Image (cartoon, rainbow, N blue to C red; front, side, top):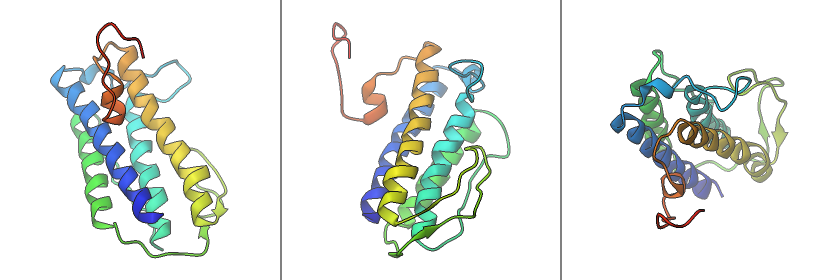
Length: 168
């Protein structure tokens, strides 16, 4: 389970890196502070939270403090660096310790909000970490698409390719 989970994080963080690379190629630094709607977090925060949920899922499974590689500077280059550092760390952690139960501090307060979490490892990953990871990753994709960046489903999942006439 742990190996598969980390592999999944690595795969989709690699896809996220590709989206950020496309933003850089299209010179779209201007959208890092854009959100889908006013009361949602901007693309930059969605990237950070996506990375942090990968770490919030991995570190407790290993019995370690949750790490963060938050960029100290704003901008696309810093976001790409955060994704890269997170991915590199996960590559180093493919052999995890099995733990009976995941306990996080009573209240977690960060970019992702507050929450109390004490779940068995499989539920911790399946019910808490993965939904949040994919939600924030999807928001990065949606914000970029809403601002005209030429992304397709393949940019998100690395598999799908549709012809120009297909709508999917």
